[in-house]
Image (spheres, rainbow, N blue to C red):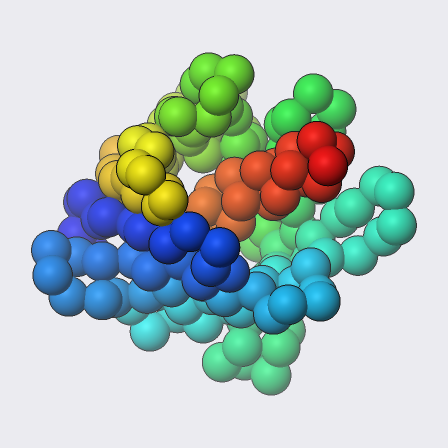
Length: 166
């Protein structure tokens, strides 16, 4: 997998496109009246099933394996999240600044691997569009799923912020 990808979300769109150079390699889509998100990257196809009313949790389903649950996202207070995979791996979603121009997914596993950055994201606000880069810092067998999860969590928090502001 490429070490650096580019993502774009047009204004008022519920779709995010992930590109490798000029080639579209993935994306994310949310239907109009749902919180759930369908995502794919390099042949990996997952579904984020948002559950709960006031306190949300998210089940991550593998669409290619009969919607088997492969992980879970638990949201923490003050804009943090933990990704727990069925394999026992644990990752922490962390924003690097208040405006969410940078964020990362770091390992939360063993003490020797703790706090190792796995995926780093940045965002540049364009007029009427969001776009940025995704950098795979540490190679993992499930890198595509982790990249999509980190982007999903960022979009989740931005959507919640917009709802609270309105």
